[in-house]
Length: 257
Image (cartoon, rainbow, N blue to C red):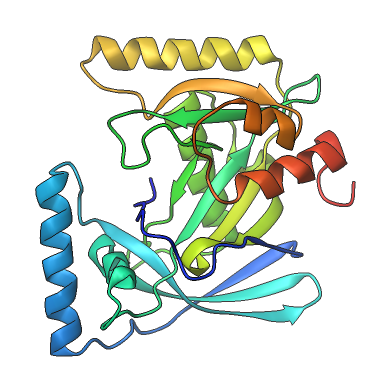
């Protein structure tokens, strides 16, 4: 799940990048001055004081994006933790720290697209989005690549919707760069009947609540267009209007299909 910072970013527009492949290159994290480190820690302590459920877990931060060829992007990244992202809010000590996340566009057999609403217990309460989350750095013996990103996306779909799909069945559908420069890899899953998706989510949420857990997506719905998205009410993830329009334009076939 991505940590959400509610202060308005400096560049709110979402850019839809044309790419079929993303190549990952690990780099060193940005050096911080003593003043930046102190400011970061103060902000994190203030945020966790307001919301003790926040966890300073590992996160992948984008350090640069460039195009290798017309269909391939090279994403440079470093290892960090969530508290680094809070430094983006500091007018005096800010550093660029775009997060890298994945989502799954799950179409239905009749041409709709599944969206979920974040539960009240999450840092993005009430926000409508695709199933997904921020990418964590791999272990020292593992690689971060497009296949690993697809595996992460498949896990998010299972954890948030209750639907199991092999990561090999996911295809890279869209790439976005949005608020704070956050970089999104949006995978598309094979179409499923609406009843299959509704049953999977109901089963997941019933099990979770029986165990005293709160499901991350407390509701799911299905859209076909930007108008449907707007009709849901409540906030939406910054990338959702662009992807809703993309889904409406290309339907189940994906980009260029």
